[in-house]
Image (cartoon, rainbow, N blue to C red; front, top):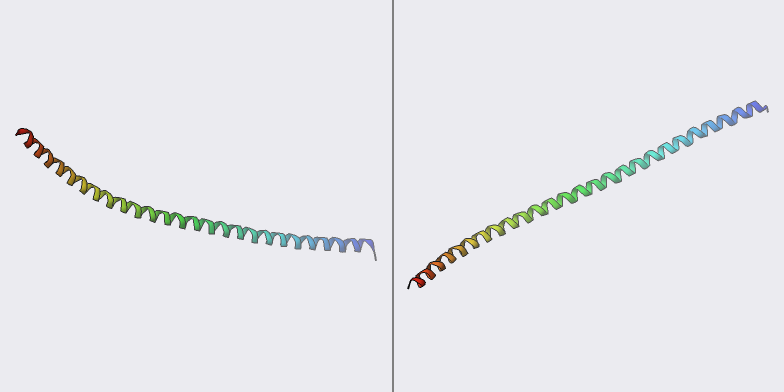
Length: 96
C-alpha cells in the first residue's frame, strides 16, 4: 500500500470524526442550553406566582385595615359625642 493513500485515508477519517464530534458537541450544547432556559423560565414563573400571591394577601390585609379604620372612626365619633355631653354636664355642675 502506498503511503499517500494511507495518509489520505487517515486524513479523511480524521475529518469525518472531527465533523461527527463537532456535531455531537453542538447538539449536546444546544440541549444543555434548552434545559437551562427551561429552568430559568420555571424559576421566573414561580417567582411571578409568588408575587401574585403576595399582592392578593396585601389586598386582603388592606381591606381588613380599612374595615378596622371604619370601626375605629365610628368609635371615636361616639367617644367625642360622649365627651361633649360630659363637658356640658360638668359645665352645669360648675354653674351651680
